[in-house]
Length: 94
Image (tube, rainbow, N blue to C red):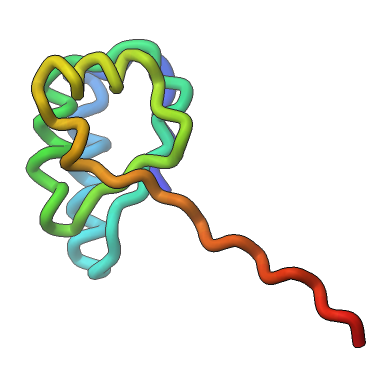
């Protein structure tokens, strides 16, 4: 899981690109926790768009206002699924 916080601009683009490449090589989807992101630029969103089909990108809820706003402005909200971990099975009486 890639955890991102604060302002996302050109300074974090390399880190995001490396995480996406590592996920692609591993054959797993990139799960992103961006819940504490306060700003992101369109170039960062473009990196997620590039990776959304290979390896795949999903975000853990809640999505921050900055990300939702940019996705709505660019019409990309429906591209990214929300990652919801499986629920733990209920305990069984033994």
